[in-house]
Length: 262
Image (cartoon, rainbow, N blue to C red; front, side):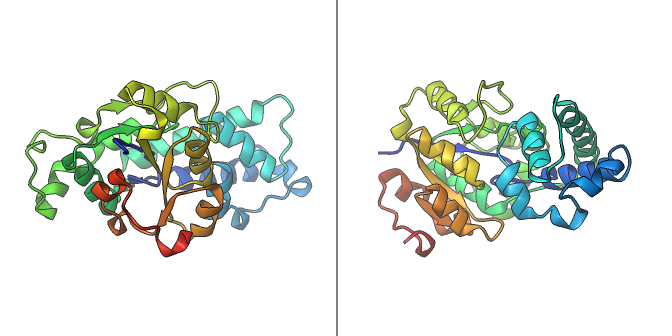
């Protein structure tokens, strides 16, 4: 029986500005500091798409994501200096976007989260992003519960979204990033559970691969019309919205596989 859910943050719980920040940072660099490189690369602004972000950046530690993005566009980086500059420029961008409040929670994910807690599941947040905790803390979780008329004894006026988690390993420095399972294994260990007792909720193929490599069940949330990619990565359930699944059924493993994975 599954006893816990481990949630990625960006793309699962929060519609964050990460994708936008990476794209804007790279566009700025290619238009200014790196403009002489453009003819010998495969880069043009319109080629940076949600699919490119999901395949090559989403779910990876910041440095790994930068290196993967540069490699995808054939931008030479022999000593890693360009990846470092891209990381720094991206971080400046995302800080501005977060300060402006340019992000939101996914309502279906919050409903699933509180439903899982009400069903007795342990909960963990596990994101490679060092911005994840800032995003979670700034969401108006109590206001959401009031609007949705969700009445649970564990939700009071002072409850924030991070308060719901039994374990939070977001931004933890892991030796290996996704698709290696380390961050999810660390979360399971912190929960005091075996991998087989945990269900990971992910939106990126790299994250799904990490969950399966760690011996965990995985729900793939197709936020970007990428159901087939998530299924191919090994997700046990693929849904467009977490409203399609009941946490209690997942915990007892009675939930049918949605059509996308059959």
